[in-house]
Length: 283
Length: 199
Ligand SMILES: C[S@@+](CC[C@H](N)C(=O)[O-])C[C@H]1O[C@@H](n2cnc3c(N)ncnc32)[C@H](O)[C@@H]1O
Image 1 (cartoon, rainbow over the protein chains, first blue to last red):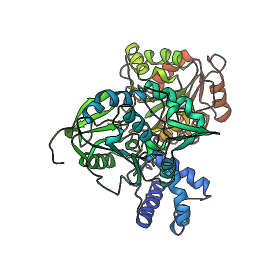
Image 2: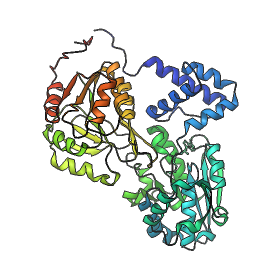
Image 3: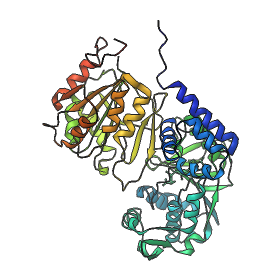
Image 4: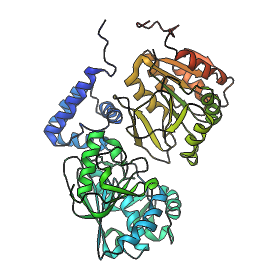
């Protein structure tokens, strides 16, 4: 029988693997266990953008040029986000999780993969309305420095305000969404008393490891970009970063089913992907 | 022998799915992945509804779920649906405000990377041009292309755009799609066109 060429162009796959290991060795960013299909789309887009005729040519360009690599990183992360994205999740946090958090004198919340920060500001607003913001510290991290800068500014295009306000109300918002920002020209800037409770910082989920004793971790719409192996690795770290009895909130289409950490958690609201760390206390 | 079917549609797609899916047998031998731009408030209930009226099983695709024969997978609203080289799905989020999410092209291109000539791509009724780039790629890689007849489609724009971009192996009315799927999925089915090296 004739040897059939393997379905995914093998040579191309090898070339991309070389690009990824080259980047990992040179810059320490490890994309080798990202979901292949969307990673490839993003890399192809960068090649177009940077006029690289091949993945090898792209690696050559990136290898000695830190600034270009910074540009490359921007393309590698999908930072699409919203205030109160998936409102029912925030409603569930408000109704089911916050009452439990209130039994602690002080809580730590981690937004892992916070993109441009809307998720953290949403949480700050929610906690403020629950009279609990003063007893909370929010850590919002990402590996995209560019979007972290935006998150730190807390300034967003005004054109989204209507959608965000609708989300806010659907999420059980108790006041006027516009009370939380000042508007000027085409922009809105969230109030400083929200930001004061948020620490924005760089953290790479693949390479930087455990992050403190959290009461709640929101890691939403980040794990879908990882393959199964990396999902398990990162989930194990998230579990280790949670206090016993702490909560984990994933994206609407992410679950713990079929993952290595399933036994460590019990579902609190499976539809909203909220879990509680329960199982064996050592992970 | 084909290994998977990908389909895309927008306006009028609900009716198209109600026609095609109930006409497929439970034991249909290929996985079928579908991107439909429908109003986001259908949400996951759409899959449940279609599953109820069909004998083939219909579900929303989950991240990292393996593609299985005899199952129809719908892209969840507001997520792109992609096929990975190990024949599992992956999801990717995109802006809710920008309405081509999920995108037909994204599904078609990633599936074509994986299945190459063993892929059947189908563009149905719709009111924008999403899917035409993807269909062109499927055709270029030796896959089979089917487009709903624009003359009888509820919304002719999408099938017309697909026909402008790629040549179709079949242009058919909606009622003929399920019978065509059944025929193409027979193990003995030979390609009548495109002259594949495998026949
Ligand atoms: C689609 S956004 C999710 C934003 C927000 N959590 C939400 O659900 O709206 C995905 C974010 O994950 C970040 N990300 C991807 N890989 C990462 C990694 N290895 N470490 C930290 N953040 C990462 C990206 O930079 C991007 O900002």
